[in-house]
Image (cartoon, rainbow, N blue to C red; front, top):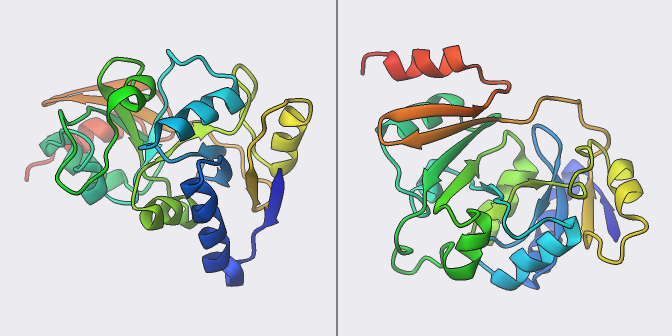
Length: 224
């Protein structure tokens, strides 16, 4: 594992180095507004499989992805009015939207498809989208110009990691490890993101979290 100690003045260089690694199919541990996550190119099946092997995660379990904007999300999923209203209020932030993948990627967009789509959606055709309030996470997706995976940076079944030390401790005896860790120090312990499934105008909270069900309902019921 390569540990990169994050310095704000070196942000562009650090992002560039990690983009090179992601394009090579490597796995990068990065900070979010909750815990550390593991990034892989979500459009590359080899990268996805490597991520799951590093994490020790079953291929039948879905993983969310990070997008840098709602515009990028619209290239991946069937966006609708409910998603738009919630995104305008809560993105970037600690909320994940679960929406159906588009039947086929838009022209000139190498989207989530084929075997990669089956893995990331758990064969459901629905995928979680995150837009964390964290510049490192957003810039990785923005400048890769593709979604990155947003699964937590821990071994399957182990606690979430809130520091580079936590990640190192969990993976030290593993054959496969994250290739790079962007170390920003210890993150504040926060609840995982609220997960909301949006099926047309039907909105269901699948996992409670920092964004309450009451706040979600309030935004959806506001008059346009």
